[in-house]
Length: 131
Image (cartoon, rainbow, N blue to C red; front, side, top):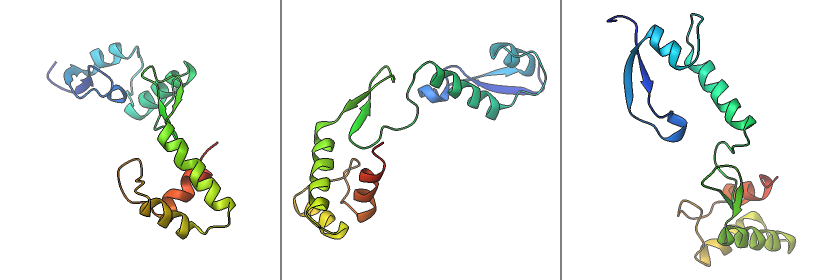
């Protein structure tokens, strides 16, 4: 076919795939196990993500204090980040303001997961998004 060509990811983008191959509409539908008209990439992505979730895969980023295992099915504690969570918790329990907590982290040489200086919002989020 020369019309209605779709770019199909050989390895799904969710798994880091970047290479695509051109497929006609009918073949692209077959690859995705679809017979009906109306290939909708948004619906395919949603269905694919739901399928992975149903299989027990962890989607998205790990919350602070953890990393996702290579199999993407369990969380693994990151000791340094867990220590920072404990430190922030102790400082807050001692009545320190968020600004004083952040100042202590930065003055002690701690950086965020991305290597940047701490801000109040970063410290607050790691404590409120722990569930």
